[in-house]
Length: 236
Image (cartoon, helix red, strand yellow):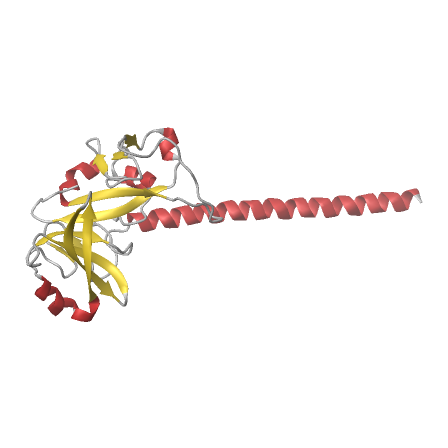
């Protein structure tokens, strides 16, 4: 009887040990997978440019679109069926705009400087597949953006109003040198993975937030809007 008890105890010990090893193996595998995922995401963030045919050349073009194009030129370049009437509005002021579609998806919005739609004011990027030459795109995280800025602080306005998340200053970092060509604004994930709305306190309205603030750095903030300017023309 005693031997039978020892045998059962020994067998149970082997089972527990095997389960423990399997759990440890699974944990290591999950951590490795997470690390690889982070590396892949980091690599994707660092890849210059994006979708072929939509490369951005500073002060010159966004894909086939140049600052000298009119609405008629857009029709010739993309086809009337791939253009959609649009408006760009901020603080009640609206400008005529034209969305350019590709395979039914919004790619960019050409915002016009005049009602006749003969002069381009700026271009708003709508697709995350279009990247700036340094790899920044809609969806780039604040931490990645700070890294591209050489680790220097990024200052931006609070959320929830017309100038929500608008970047104000790069603190002399790497992005300062090329920010004359574009304007970035940030957004924040409003729901968690379960689809539940998250309420963030102290980050809304006409205030200045800083990326190096530990509390801000932990929030799910990302590039939400990108405007491309020509002839060093920059607006809020």
